[in-house]
Figure (spheres, each protein chain N blue to C red):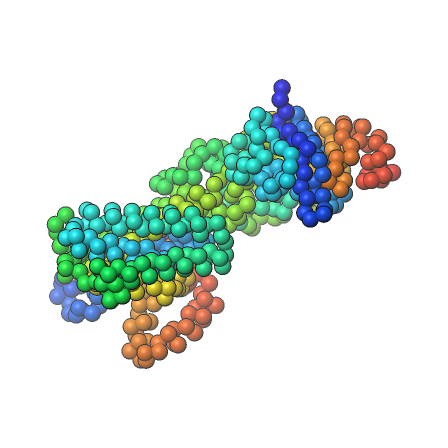
Length: 306
Length: 248
């Protein structure tokens, strides 16, 4: 319980310091804002990957669906979160329900491949949306407002993202401890036993995919606003892989580990990217080392996972 | 009164091998029906078909008044069929109490609750505590199931079946790997269940079988070669030749 609260306290320090006049520049809030957005996506993935044991390799799809919901509604001159957010979450939830119903008939490697295939479908579907820029992507006319207030603009952006991150974390933590979360975990631990106890494993896993996907769409909405731009690249398989790396590196099943994982990946991209454009060559081996020596991820350093 | 479990002319083959070859069995309310037979007789495949993990080729299975022949395992469980596994099968990352609380939930509640922590659900946890006391695990509710000794895991396995307050329990070698003292305790526990629910017991420990069973069916090469009370089975020359041996 202490580590997650320390993480949120540190993240909250940034706007406080800049309000007090400490010169952080624009760069630190920008980078940490990005970290938090990816943390929301990764944390939602942790529900199905960490707690449910479902290795989805297509979690960039709901991210892109959330982002494209912003773009498509933007083109229709609808900018308020009151409409954008429910549309984004419902679309991503529906996508996960429809594709999950097929994907969940498979296990293991087949599940990984089929979720990847469905995410690729979103990628190519996005590229074929000529009205929304096709391959080139779409630049937003206006950022999303919240009941008319410009909460996703300028200085307000960072605190808003932080609040969303905190709420998503809280929501997932509550779910993890609930009947649903514990049943999902039981199915991961021992599927035949859970079924023999009377649990409909398929229904529980499908619901988990829908919830994870809908929450991930929130990250997509934020990401589109941060970049003021969406493109098919949001749904690329490399992005799905990044999200998995964030979860695994941060500490599978811990939820707050996803924040640390997102921080590590975004920072590595930034810092190693300055050294060489071939930064993945350095990042790859360090990931291997992390998986070998940090079995509970970054969140598990220095003691038991809480 | 109708039989709790009625298996009619059940058939299952893998290629040319007839694993279940026209098995017909009945389980009367409150009784213990043991299924014995040499290795490879098809006992475990029979259990799998009753619990729903293997689909039979022909024949039917009725649980009380329900035809469950084609239902998935979780639906059978909800209708009152609980099972223990031959190889211990618990939820290793959860505490003993939580294992049993989930068993209570699986049998009677819905998994679709998203707000209240399971640990705070008093009714489920109280019911679980009661079951733990019955199987003799009351002292270890907080231990991780994965860290229990083999005998304790067998007790937990039984608790998971009991927690459902089932109509029928399928016990697949509940004494497997238990030491003599543990076996004695488990046998005494099973004896107390007589009358509460029907038990279909697959077991290799003949002492246990002849102590507990009201009725015994002997399975050999997928067929029921004998059926009767323990005394009748003991006296059956075919059974002695095929399985029990002369000195039993």
